[in-house]
Amino acid sequence: VRIIRFPKKSFFFLLSRQPGFYKIFVRESTRRLKTAHSMMRAIAHDKVESRIASALAELAQRPSACPVPGEGIAITRQEIADLTGTSVETAI
Image (cartoon, rainbow, N blue to C red; front, side):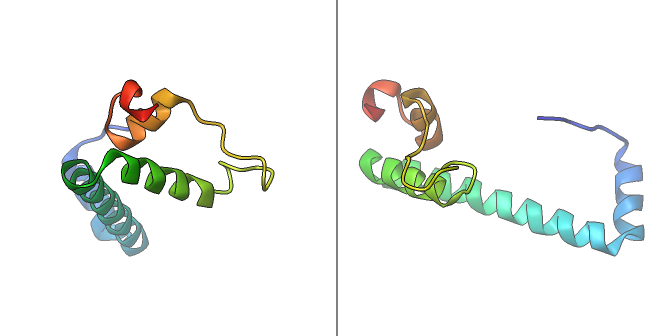
C-alpha cells in the first residue's frame, strides 16, 4: 500500500479542475464503501461457511488468482480467515 498525503485544500482544487479525476475518485470511493458494507453485513448475518464460499468464488473470478485455469487458488487458511472476518480455527 502506498499512501500519499497532501493538504485538503489542494485535493479539492484538483477535484474541481479535473472532472475525469473527480469521476474516478467518486466511483472508486463508492465501490470501496459498498464492498465494506457488504462485508459488514455478511459478518453480522451470514454463516461462516457461506462467507468462505463467497470469498473463494470471488477470488476465482480474478485472473491473478488462477493464472492457470483448473490449477486452483493458492491461499492460506489465515488469508481465508482474514477475508471472511473469522478465526483460522473456524476457517479450517
